[in-house]
Image 1 (cartoon, one colour):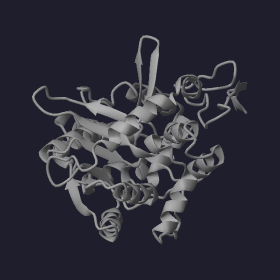
Image 2 (cartoon, helix red, strand yellow; image 1 turned 180 degrees about the vertical axis):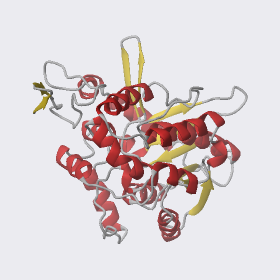
Image 3 (cartoon, one colour; image 1 turned 60 degrees about the vertical axis):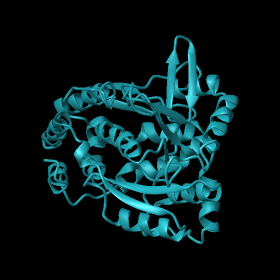
Length: 344
């Protein structure tokens, strides 16, 4: 694809496998036309490592220290509902939960509670705004300021610079305040702390999520490990909390989700919702930023997440492109969303 910029033609290349492209300043392609993520996945993915993790995961069945073996995050949507049914059938004692940040649509909690009730699983809605640090609130305020700036070529460059910078500062340990372009990066700083704190509060060691990606790519020298389980131990005097990305662990595909939902007797999607969606479908903050982020960046900020799903075989490139092409209308500005959430 070629785009004319100031009289010059600039070629943008897209990864042969996923939807990552060189429109994103963080993406480069090798001689084979693969982005770094796809190239490394093809080279280093180890099914034996995943099998060992699966055995470890199953060892938690019936072994919880209290009433539950695991906590399972659900939104009542397609992936999490299918995951909850699958885990219940395997014999886990489950506490299903939804985190409330103040900027998720209210219907999510009603839908999640309904799914949990249908599967006879205990459910709790957990407000996690208490885990927002002053430095995070400052970042939310800076984000609101950024998204109120008038569009210009200067702002486009600013967005691209801040997008790249945000990739360095989404760790829960980060003490920097900056205006994040991609909302998920800032939200992650709050959510990860909440996973650990809420699990420890209930003496639970494993939190299972239905997000369709691997937990992390860890690198130690030349060693690359694609893992479904992230080990978190922020406190030396407290137990480890494991975060599990179940679709990657089970090597589930979108087609598998469809089959599970049919067995549940629930397949009719909510009006206007597709099987594969960008984050703006279920997050009011992502929805408020989506249009301007795409305009300023030149690419969809959620393209990297959906690319990882393609890389691992969960969805097809066509499904991802359809999801990224869908526009989500926001009734509120970024600042209004954050004020309504009580964050600003």
